[in-house]
Length: 282
Image (cartoon, rainbow, N blue to C red; front, side):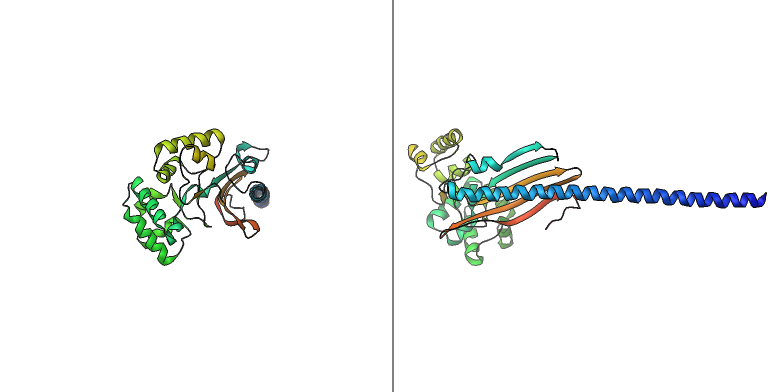
C-alpha cells in the first residue's frame, strides 16, 4: 500500500511537471506569435509612413516644374498629399505639412541690414521684449554663424523668456529663405507692413482666393516687405500611421533646392515622436 501511494505520488509529480511544461510551451508560443504579429504591424506602419513621405517629396519636386513662382496649400501638389486623419483598413492615417517659411528666419540677422534690424526690433516690441535683444542676437550670429535651432541662442545669453516670446514667429531655417506671404500669420504680417488696415485686407484676400500676389499687394497700396516673398523651400511633414498594436508618428524636414538649373528635394531631418518598440528607427 505504501509503495502504491509512493508510485502514485511520483506519477502526480510527473504529470504536474508535464502540465507546467505544456503551459510554458503554450505561453512561449503565444508570446512568439504576439511578437511576430507586432513586428508585422510595425513593418506595415513604417512602410506607410515612408511611402507617404516619398509622396510628399515627389509632389514638391513636381511643383518646381509646374509652379515655381508661388507656393501655398491650395496648389495641386499640396491637395494631393495633405490628408486629415482617416480610418483605413490598416488603422489611422494622416499627413500634415507645415510651411517653415511662414516665420522669420533668425539667421538673416547674421548679415543684418538696417531694414532687417528695424524689423527685428519692431518684432521684439510687439511681443513685449526689449528691442535690444534683436541687436544681441545679431551680434551673436555675426560671431558664431547660423544656428540650426532657435533654442541654440540660449547658450549665448539670449533669455528663455525672449525665445519663448518670439518662437511663434521666428525660426532657424535649414536653408536661407524669406517669409512666405501665403502662409505668414496675421500678427507677423502686421509687424512687417506696419499697417493694420492693409494687413486685414490682405488676409481677407488670401482667405478668399487661397493665395496672395504682387497684384494683391498693389491693390491695397502695400509694398512687398523686405525679406518676404511668395515661395517656400522648407517644410515640416508630420505623418501618423497605426496598424494593429503598432503606431508611428514621423516628422521629416524637407528642403527643396532650385539653383543654377539644379532642382532637388531632400530629407534633412527625420525623427520619430512615438512608436512601437518593434519599429526600426533607421
